[in-house]
Picture 1 (spheres, rainbow, N blue to C red):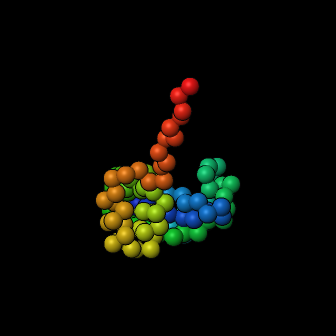
Picture 2 (spheres, one colour):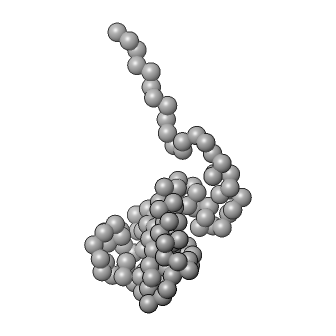
Picture 3 (spheres, rainbow, N blue to C red):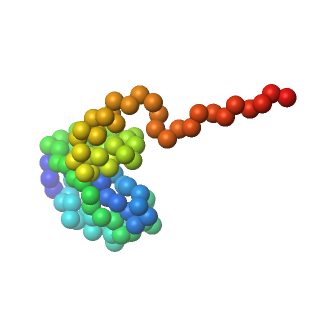
Length: 109
């Protein structure tokens, strides 16, 4: 077993992204996802494809970053996957909520 942990992003068969961490090798963990070894999000969305990984010396850092990435917009995740740090920086500066529509005014009766 490794001392640290990998943070990883996979694309599921339905096009969604799954973000996780593992202390085992990435090859083993991706094989587990594709075999449906554990019930959960990816077990019904196979096969999965590894798109991104990052090694952290401390598992606590991997967990912290996993939680952060899970709150990111799809656009930010895709910029990270592409390694497009200029776009990622721009998206991080946004103050307005993404993809939210303003409430519709209702006529008063």
